[in-house]
Length: 292
Ligand code: CCH
Image 1 (tube, rainbow, N blue to C red):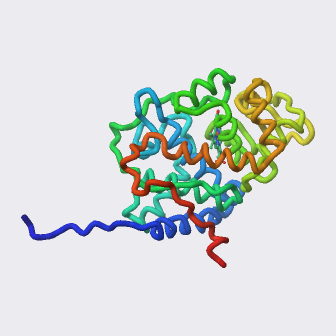
Image 2 (cartoon, rainbow, N blue to C red; image 1 turned 30 degrees about the vertical axis):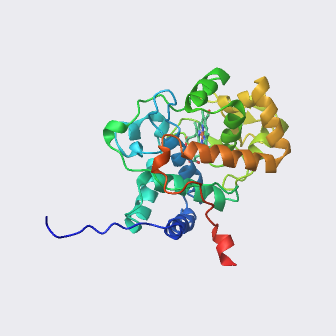
Image 3 (cartoon, protein in one colour; image 1 turned 30 degrees about the horizontal axis):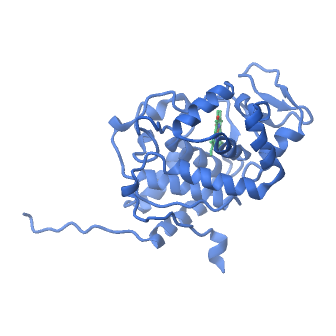
């Protein structure tokens, strides 16, 4: 007995809204980086932290934020995500009570919402794990493959075809970097705004193989400035994927609704339900909504 009782801080929804707001402000402090926003790379961090989940063994997912540790941080699929983790570190300094898993997933929510995307229901409860909780390499998708691979990877996490197609629509955001994945270029003309343009472009443009020394990727015939990965293009080739991709190209509201549900599910993969502090996920407010 030291007689010194540890004072445990119990954050409220308002405290998480403060973290959200800090992230929301940092998104635009990217200066010359990429398209002037950390939003896309932060969304990718939230996805790669969660997408390691394996339903059969219950391992992986967002709970332990194991990408902080080697070798997971060095897995090829995670190239470039140090940029997002370093931005997150600044937020963590300001809110030391938040777990990394909660921080990274909440930041993904903030990035989507602030880039004009749908509301993503979210709740805290992830705990920091150890390097020994890390997952083996190979759990994230390989962009050079086809529909069978995409299904194998996402079915392992517990997603169906409709959810797979909805999730990949996040490629409306951001770009590929030759020094990270080897691929190059953005998918859309507005890579810092969340839209259904990814699906529209898939169907409206003519896509041809890019002739270059890099990995096989498509470019739009008209301008040659946009790209599609082989795994993106299969959404127009596989019969069942195509059905959903076409529906999202035609109806942005439907895409927003389905993306929101699938992304919220993704962010909770691997988190035991008893760890969540709230029985239902919350809606965090955008900066715009708080101006009122
Ligand atoms: Fe993705 N993605 N992704 N992706 N991704 C890349 C970049 C982003 C695949 C491959 C790649 C999802 C699914 C898939 C984002 C969100 C999501 C890159 C370029 C490759 C390669 C990396 C680089 O060079 O920087 C493959 C394969 C699949 C599925 O088959 C899902 C699901 C999501 C989120 C819901 C975002 C955002 C980016 C842009 C990152 C940036 O830095 O701009």
